[in-house]
Every structure is written in structure tokens, then in C-alpha cells.
Amino acid sequence: MALDVVCGGRFDRNSGGYGAGPAARSISVRVVPFSQRRQMLEYKAALHQARTVAVDPRYTSQTCPKCGHVARGNRDKRRHRFECHQCHYRSNDDRIGAMNLHRQGIEYRVTGVIAARPRS
Image (cartoon, rainbow, N blue to C red; front, side):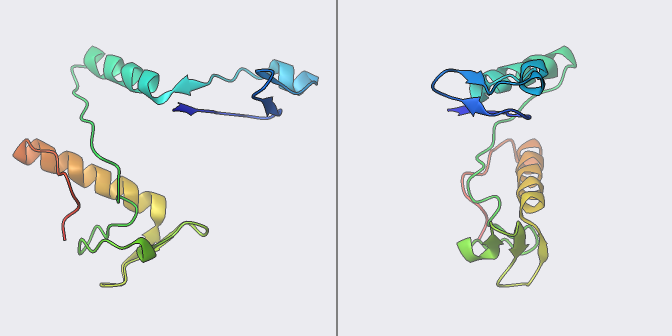
């Protein structure tokens, strides 16, 4: 799976290029697969004697970081809002995902085990 990053201009997948015009020609955009991004991140981490840990991102935007309740209804994708149906904690859904990924990283450093499932 590749991540397409487009900044201005219209990317045409069939021809592999951007729409005509000086703005489209002057933009340098790279399309980099996730596996290559991960390799770059691991390389940079190694340069700084840091370690990377791959964690499972599933359910991170649906899990309440306060009480651990997991439900699809906690997240409103269209408005980028999160509200826990159990404890009513509210925040941005992307922030919630980041908080949960951070928690998984901390748990790994403490226990040495990557959590397979969100806590209940």
C-alpha cells in the first residue's frame, strides 16, 4: 500500500504525472510506500541510538485513553471528534489515537510486551 502525498496540481494515476501549469511543474512531491517510510524512520533512529517499536494501530481511535472502553460509536470520523460513551471523555479523534499509541509504547518499555488488544 502506498501513501500518495499531493500538494497542489492534480495527480493523474494513469499517466503518472501532474496536471499542466507552472505551479504543478514546480512542486516536488514524492510518493513513498509505508514500508520505505518505516525503513527511513528505523535508519534515523539507529543513527541516534534510538529504538523503534511497531505497535498495532487497530482500535486506537475508538479506545478511550481514560477508561479503556472500546466502541466504534466513540468516534465521529466526519467531525474528527471522540466522545467515550462510558466516561464521556471528549477530544479530537486523531489525538486519541496518538495518546493510545503512546500508551502502547510506554507499556512496551515497562513490560517488554506489545499489547495485542486494547484493554477492556
